[in-house]
Length: 151
Image (cartoon, rainbow, N blue to C red; front, side, top):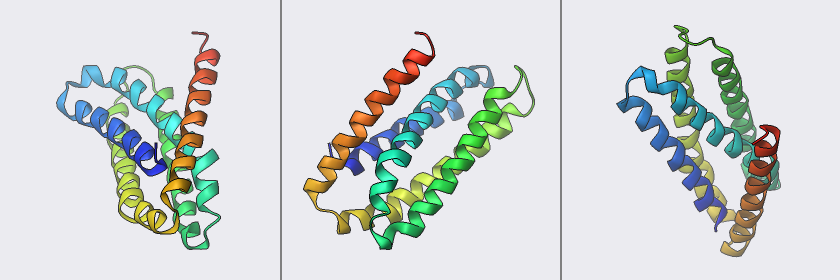
C-alpha cells in the first residue's frame, strides 16, 4: 500500500473514533479514549521512526516534518495526562476535546500541505516501498505493545 494511503487510512480510523466521542454519552468516552490512544501511539510511532526520517531527506519538507514532530510531542503529552487522570476527573472531557482538536489540526496540515508536496517529490514506487516499511513497522510495534501488555 502507498505510504500516503496508509497514513490517511490511520487518520480516518482516528476521525471515526472522534465522531463516536461526539455522538455518545460521556460515560462511554473512557473506553473510546483507550482506542484513540492505541491508534495514535501506533501512528505517531511509525511516522517518527519511518516516515518523517525519509521525508527529512528532502529539504523542502524539513520544516513541515519538524512541525509534525512537535505536534506529536503535544499529542503524546495529552495522551499521558489523560491516561493519568483519576476516574471521574473533571479534566477528562476538556483534555479529550483539546486532544481531538490538536489531532484534527495535525491531520489537516499533513493531508492539505505535507502529503501533496510528498506526492510531487516521490514517485509511486518510492511511496509503495515506504508504505511497506510503514506497515511492517506498524505490525512490529503492535506485537511488541501486545507483549508488553502481557496479552
